[in-house]
Every structure is written in C-alpha cells, then in structure tokens.
Image (cartoon, rainbow, N blue to C red; front, side, top):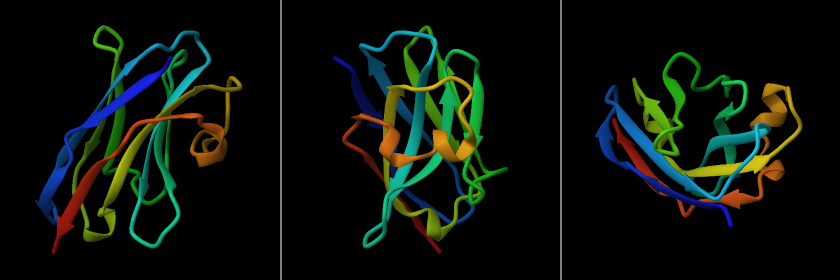
Length: 129
C-alpha cells in the first residue's frame, strides 16, 4: 500500500522560498515516478515537476523551470520540491503523487495527472504580492 504525506506548505511573500516534502512508503521498482502537482481554486490540477526514481531524470512545467527543483532522498524515502522566486500565481494546493509507469516517459507524459494512481492529501501554498 503506497502512502504519501506532504508537508512544508505555508504563506510567503512574492520572491520568497518554500520547500515541500513528501514522505513516501510502500513503493518498489525502478520504473517508479513521483511528482508534484498543484490545483488552484477553479482550475484543473496540473503537473509541476516529476522525477523518474530509477534514472533520476527530472521533468518540469515551463511555468516553474528555473525556479523549482524536484529531488529525492532515497535514505529517507522522501521527495522534495524546492520553490524559489515564488509568484502569486504559484498559490495552490500542492499534491505529491506516485506510480509505476513506462520507462523513459516524455515530460508531458510524466507530468500528466491521469497517469498517477497514488496521491497525498495536499499542502497549501499561498504567495502574497
């Protein structure tokens, strides 16, 4: 049973930074992907960043490239999302997701909401101007 628990959300002013964490358990295999997704009020959930655990390959949405960094700590079974230069439009509920997927996926595929079956409960990020 895969379990994902997010933490690290909060309120910050524009230009500030936050680091989200996702404690994971119950997953196995080299073709395991994990990702961060977000959903703002009235909008669809969207992919922000993803990582292919076996290869260490990372994928980013264009809107966060150069500002956000996804990383993993295998010893702690924890996924991170370092968010710098935050903007008001980054305000959303952020979710961690995981699943065993096809190797060598494209960015569009790895950031696709529908390919992930395991989700955390989310952590709120609010950026004020």
